[in-house]
Amino acid sequence: MKTKNLFTSLAAAVMLSAGLAGAGVSAAEPVHAATTQTQKGIGLQFRSVSATVNSDKPVLLTLKSDNQSFEKTDSTYTKGQAVNVYYSVDVTVTSPSGQKQSITLYCIKIGSQTEAPVFIPSTEVTTSAKIPTREDWMKQRENDVKTVQDAFNKVTTKYIVITPKSKKGAKIYYAYKKSAKAKKVYFKATKKKIKYGKKYKSSMIVKNGKSRYAYIGKKRYLKTSTIKVVSVKYAPVQLSDDLKNLIVQN
Image (cartoon, rainbow, N blue to C red; front, side, top):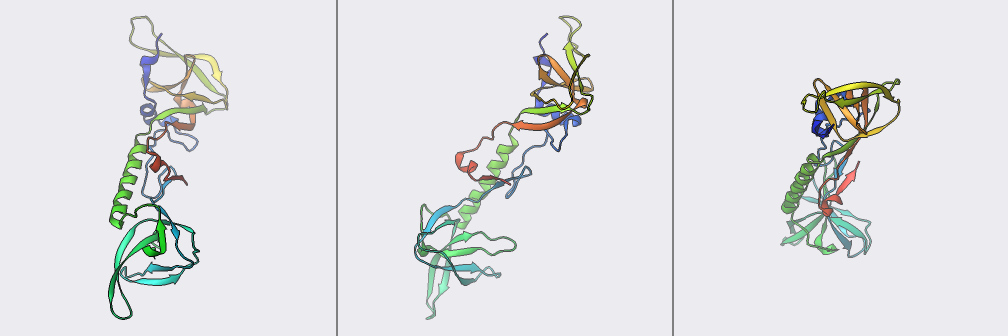
């Protein structure tokens, strides 16, 4: 008997079967990418451009709480030291003599709720590539987050690893039809069992009436109410190399 027509997609079947959630894993739970960290513990680093410091101890500028003025701070950077630059901003400064001058600052530390962003004058570093403006950098960030989120939402399940719930093991079922022309499929339990602790890969779930069965190969099935999921194997996420390099496991 051909059983492939019985199969539904694994992801769809698992979503319908609450009995397959176990060991802290939900095979139906999608992977979501957030702006800083995903529900699966995946973070997305900020894009940056590498740069080298031109001289020892360059002066740094920390943005004050008014978001309009800066506070000068001494640094411990040495000539030739590598730093990451995120974006650039143009600001107007007034010299002691009262002359106004426009300078470009590079952000080398991104601000947070507890820390202010830190900048370095563009003349103090040599960059390896063009530095984007803050507006362009933020747009790129939004695009990166959306692209990663979409990619993870499209990730498909390759297979799940299952094991019997009970120490008594799990009964093995076989699918059959009463005749070659019959459309209805039945599942029959056998005297054979899968031992407790034994693990099997399953890439297909069969829905039959109110019951669901996990296919474990060699025409054998296990009732999903008698098993639990040990782990889930997802297909590789489809992303460009530059975005893959920004992803970190938390």
